[in-house]
Length: 304
Image (tube, rainbow, N blue to C red):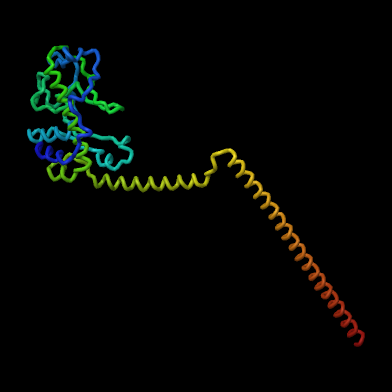
């Protein structure tokens, strides 16, 4: 499995992001002069618990474990890499997770009764490199730092042992950044080579991402509409001119409304007046008709 993974890695040109040992700057203080004296972990007299359960491993460590028949001790998956690939801000808010060495206790599953590593010669790179680690600062400097979790060390003149530790830290860093690229750009090839068991379901991620993207688009449109509704010029003169212009428009509108209301009122009065005249005329005709009828009745009575 390791051979397959290394062949896949050759397809990627990652020289710009990998680190060479000779380019590393030491950011280690108070632990020897790093010229004649070097810090070396004193594992024989260790007082820390630097071998807990759940230590995360790299994709290359997974391949080594599979080759050794130890993959049944690996739990978890590589998650967050599809989202990292899709992100447009460099993945600043993406949470990545890796498989880890599972254990039913608080100690590493490979720690024996003597509290020593039972797979010492085949231990993961992170264990080989500890407590050294490679970090990249804001100026793109490659820094070697001493992890704060290790206080059990000794200062010796064994330069070879220290640089062996440093080489492991550089290799661990390079394998992790290479694995990140493989998990983003060559996912199908990884599945074809038997690593699918340790990878998240990208289809589910893509569906969820599409839903989130549509919701985000909706929120952006809503926000744009709000901004458009309340958008105003930013300089004071423009604001004053706009307010004055709107004020004059309001004045003209009020005058127009007043004239319209006056015209409507005049029309209403005219209609009422016409109706009143019409009603009065009809009323007079009705009275005259009633009087005439009464007169005719009276004449008819005296005739009898």
